Length: 328
Image: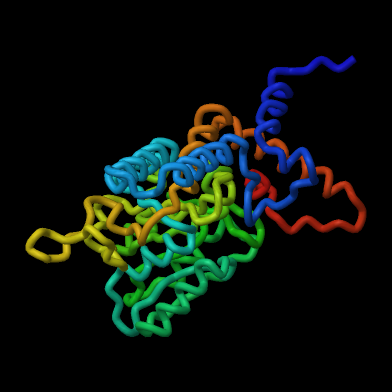
């Protein structure tokens, strides 16, 4: 008779929080993660309170602001940033757009990206081209992740302003070396904007250690939150280089002059749906305290390596994903 291990017990406990993985074969690894019960219950509690009591009780605006900042502080602690460097967003795409559109561009300025990017980054780059005449230069990398820094370096010219790319490539699952890419950017006085939609929550992410300037995360993917949630990191010393794209209610002085909000909160756009933010806070706390990101990373790496080995033993199956990428 098999004896259950602590690891088995932990996995069973975590799966019990995720009904979707118990009722179906859940293979959606790129679009939406399964919602944990704890997130559903947090959203339901807020929805019930709003139904019974209304949505604009005394102190609502201040309490919502405090709530949002607590979520930013929670995320900052999980991903190696300071609380004032985290903005709440409604998606990773919103964060990417806020970072890129917040810069001052001249016709002929350049962005260097890779040939393996998701439309969530490619389309904002196309908008820069249409709106400002910005040129995107693409580094051909394919499966040669070891040569990605050299490939990017070959595309840099005197007109290059930004390197924009993914942490985890959606095409192959390869994990790009952000620290080395950031070093390349520093040597050339460039800004690094990262699409973290496929990475946050499933590969190690220490934003300060990475050296990147902006990093956009999706709340509904590996962070298992609801749609219309996300996070944007902007390094504090880049606040002057990346301006707010939208002016929101409350961002003005009594004299009537526009005054950006303190810290990365200046990049937040519009209102947030309170039940969704409550669910996001609950699931981030669950990932930090019950799942454990280090444990999750190790398990993902082990399962990915085992999966790849099994595939390679099947006649007629070609595995194009690099071995190192099976950690993601």
